[in-house]
Length: 125
Image 1 (spheres, rainbow, N blue to C red):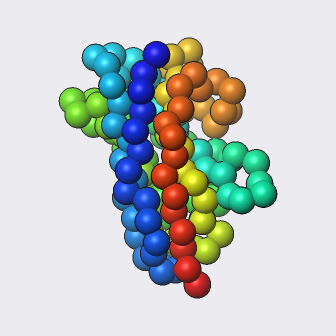
Image 2 (image 1 turned 120 degrees about the horizontal axis):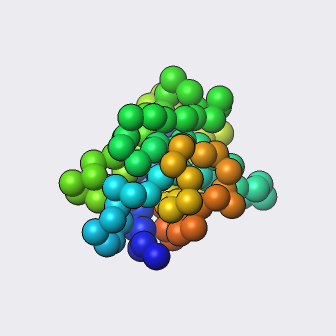
């Protein structure tokens, strides 16, 4: 089991940028596929982006492709989500998640074993 702590959320105007970080505990961070998901009020949790263990393969939801970038630093046990050109519809609680069972950047939430507590992102129009 790995503990995940997100940070970097906040309030930003439309068109602005934020960088989320997710710090993981433990010595085996490089063995986890990592993902970012989000949940807006009254909506189901949805996939945002994911990255494989080495960081060489990424995947994105169509709604964020070209605006968001996921990356990881295995030496720092941290995964990042750079969010540019933010829109009001990006407002949500953002969660990072870790998977020990899949080696590809999956967008399926049930394939992730451990979750952070979430960080709020609010984009004003």
